[in-house]
Structure formats: C-alpha cells, structure tokens
Image (cartoon, rainbow, N blue to C red; front, top):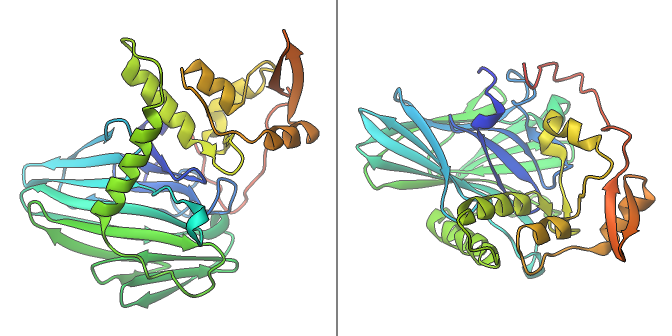
Length: 328
C-alpha cells in the first residue's frame, strides 16, 4: 500500500478522537479512545507496519469522497461499469452521562447500482506497532487485544484471520446495506465489546441530527455560508469535548509554521466567535492548565483576556517502530 497525499483524506470523529479515511476506503489513522491515546491505525506514518482498516469495492473503480450536507459524516463512493458502491463513515457522538463510554467507528456499506463485491481488511497495529496483540474470532466478529488495549470489530459476515488481522469478502445487491462497527468500551473489561447492534441507519440518523443541530447555531447567512459551515464543522470535530481544547495532533507538519507564530489565537471560543456562532462549549480550567504548563501565554488586550502559543516550536518524538516517512 503506497502513501496517499494528505488531501485525499477525510476526517470523522466523536469529539474525543478522530480517524482519517482515505479516498480508497482505508482508515489510515486513529487513536482510541482519545486524541492522545496510543494508535490503533497509523498507516499514514508507515504504510507497511502502521495498521489500517479498509473497506473497498473489488472492482476497478473511480473514487469520490464528500461529506453529507451540514455534517461530519463522510461518504466514499466507488464507481465502476460493474456497479456503484459506497461506504458511509462516522463516529456516533455519545452522551457520556447516560452510562459507560463507548467509542465506535461505524462503516455502513451499500450497493447503489448493480451488485457490488467488497473486501474488508482490518490490520490494527497497537501503540505505533510497539505492542503485539492477539486476535480472537467470535460469532459476531473479532476481538483485538494488546496490553492495556482492547477493541472489537462487529460484523454481519464471518471474518477470517489474516496475519495479525482479519479479512472477508462479501457481495451486496442494489439497495442492500451492511454495517460494520469497530468499538472500544472504556473501563468495561471483557464485557460489552461484541454487544453492538448492527443498525447503521439508526446510528447514522442520530449522528446527522447532532451535527445539523449544532451547525444550525451559526449566525452567518452570506454567500459563503456553505464554506463557513464546513470550516466550523471541522473545527468542532477537532475539539476535545471534556475540555473544549482544539487538538493539534492530527495536523503533524502542516501546522509547524503556525506553531511558531506567538500571536496565534488557539481557543475554541475565539474561533467560534470569528465564524459567527452564538456560543461554544469551553472549559476555562483547561486554558489555565495550558498556561501553567507553559504552552499558552495569557494577556489582556483592551480589557479582553487572550491566549497565544508560546513560540518554542513543536514538541517532537521519535517512533523507532515506524520508520516510514509521513510526507515523502
């Protein structure tokens, strides 16, 4: 698998973490359950050992990718003379007050025109390929387990072991959907991993309602409304819900030059105000912690408290297990 250009990826997330989905249907980056958790897929760093989760048509096809209107639900379409198939990717937004924290990547696969044969391949590589893992096949899918990390892949179709991962091929007829769920249950031990109901339409409807309700708060109604909404949705997607902080981890080298600008505003409140939103969820305590840690500098300008990044350059870490180059 060759490296893909960064612009060929879409982003999905649940306000705790994100996943990068390529136009070929491969999830090449994801850390669960949070932005700064160890990785489970990191093929964007090393295409041989980093790990990926791919669902794609087996036919030679053109690839198209787009977001469903006013949402962070991603649609990847495979167009070929034999048929048209699509994968709808999203991460449901959970109300954690209702019980245990469940983080899920939901992939709804459909045949749009003609019968389409798909292949699924899930090859996780835990903690940047530093933690070996075990694969256990069960009736409704597979469980992947490494020290301190445990995930399941719930599937309608039987999965077969392939190396340190699993794979399957399946045929869908026109209008027929099939749902696959990769899930992690925080602090739940051995139970709950394979309990997911494969009702992709229900989860999709709930997720679309969440994003569309949120973006409806935007006051802007000018000629660039679609672009403003898309920018706002992306900024919201990069927000860590418990604190309101905006994550920089998935941007890698793309923001190195920005990180050197000492006057760059970094609060979700400031960004939301610029985009015309009435309000934004933000915990001031998170900003105070960043000031104490020396990451942000607080100052008052005209009676308004502002925050700026301390210009000391980004923090780097070498990952010896993944020697691949991110952007060659």
